[in-house]
Length: 523
Picture 1 (tube, helix red, strand yellow):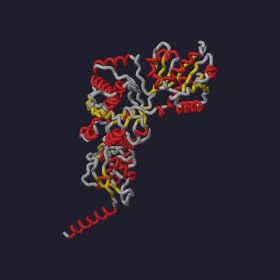
Picture 2 (cartoon, helix red, strand yellow):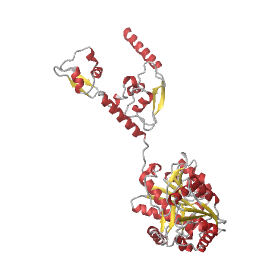
Picture 3 (cartoon, rainbow, N blue to C red):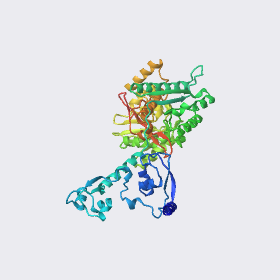
């Protein structure tokens, strides 16, 4: 009895000493972590981790669970993964041995090891009794995995670990959308703004209908931004708002700030259709800004111009007009200088100087300094007055506002093959645009409000692009915005992050060219 008690005391003391010599710390298991990955992280074997956590099962650990792991510095007697298993292969994740082998008459250790592709040393390590006993017929040996099999298994486990680290893509069986715009539903008579906002929503609904016909499931909730601050706050406090995947709007800058924070906190894609504030996307990674200031697109304009007109005779004409944009013109000239491209400058008040700047037998590109309609009319009438012969080919390169000149100056736009840049363009000659207008009229018993841009087409583009993207890619929408194409009705989309922690800005740009035959090229 005394011997048994003494043995128990010895074992207890040994256990206490061992516990004191092994320094541990707590580790909270994260999503995707496995015992294998933790063993690699702390440079120990899986078996050792299980020794530190009695009752722990390798195939049943959960995120949030707290376990004991070794302290960062290995302690005396602690078995590291490099010492025990060079290829970081865990016996817990597969059978300890590949198979068993019953020894036959006249078999040797060398022959058996060669049969299974292992070394004699590996075979003996798997069967320690072979160090003291001779190989005999009928003995059952453990057959270890070969080095190649260990390597392959380790790679397989690493691949599984990397796969587990990938975020789980959540699909949306139904895309839930809130449209927040100043509809001014309480107005006795709709203002111009409320007509535009209503058109935007109507175009959005047409996109939703098209998507539903193609199999997408969509729910749309509309909120009147102009209904008052109490109603606005009440709307955002609705629990259902946190279940949205997409918010379009609002328009007021102070409301945009509030909604941007709400969308960011709840990981909701937030589309701002009208604001051109450059800092809007700062700190708002889920925000998409459709309407970027043109000043941020000028460098693209210059580059696109050079691609098309590097070999042409470029003439800048100062219009001395209230619409002069000298920031744009100065930047334009600097860009050409930086690229080593020659150009000339003239003044509309000196038409002899303008004529001298033109070259016969070459395409002459005239770039006026103003976007005003009065400046455009002054320019083409004075060029007409020069009575240039056929040997002088003249083309105008202008501004986004020129797309509003179509009705009044249609023939002149074609005569001078007028070309301009814009982040949007509604092509009335396009069959698709005509079909949209017919459909819009049929649904709502009215035409779109004649504005710049056409808000119904804007709403359609926003709805078609974002809802389809969210339906197809789910929570991986952000990673896939460049992996699917959408042919726009009016607004092309090319969203880029302004910085690592910012939202996305639309940097798409059209170059529109009117042709002599009356057709229009949009590229």
